[in-house]
Amino acid sequence: MAATSITTVDVTGKFTLNKTMSGDIGKILAVQGVGWAKRKAATVGTITMSMKHFKDDSGVENLHVHSTVVGGITVGKEERVLDGVERPTDDPLVGPIVNCMKRVAVADLTVPFLKDGFTADTVENGVIHFSINSQPSNKYSWKLSQTCGLQDINGERRYVHHLKITSPTEDHEVLLVYDYLGPV
Image 1 (cartoon, helix red, strand yellow):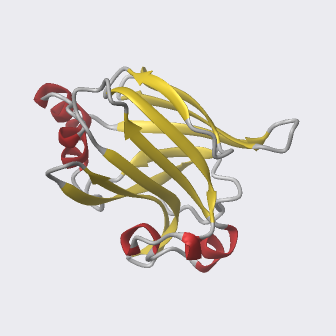
Image 2 (cartoon, rainbow, N blue to C red; image 1 turned 180 degrees about the horizontal axis):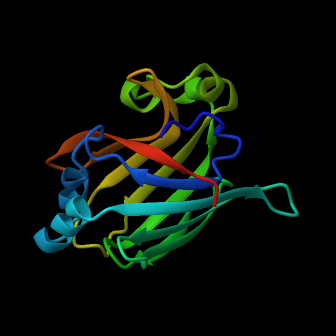
Image 3 (cartoon, rainbow, N blue to C red; image 1 turned 120 degrees about the horizontal axis):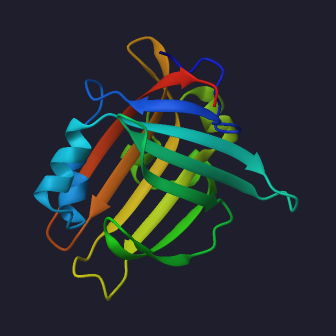
């Protein structure tokens, strides 16, 4: 279903990955060192994201994401703060990382894949940008940049993630397209 009422100012809603319209997330997970069985589960299972986007008492954007697979099993719960502060964490799937999340003007992005194709209102309001790097203690070395916004795909307005991952030996760009399921 199209995300007709969603903008990057408020992406609150329930979404599921449209595997037919999306690229291969397995490439990203492989560079991050995720084993074959977990990559297969991620590409076969249906993952649903329930997102709540709001500003806290200080006026800082927050994005709380609760991800489940078929059957309602929780696979991730993240409380993201879009303030541009680097935060180290130990991710259960990919190991030690440093992540930084913020709103970015599309014009400020330098990588064409990360900025191309967004709707006029996404360009006007900016994209949600994630920068995630493996820490030196991580067995695998990689950098991931992700932009989130709205894009017209096959005549429908869709919530999308543009992902670009680089490592010393690989470079992949993957577009993830989501179906809007409705409000949370």
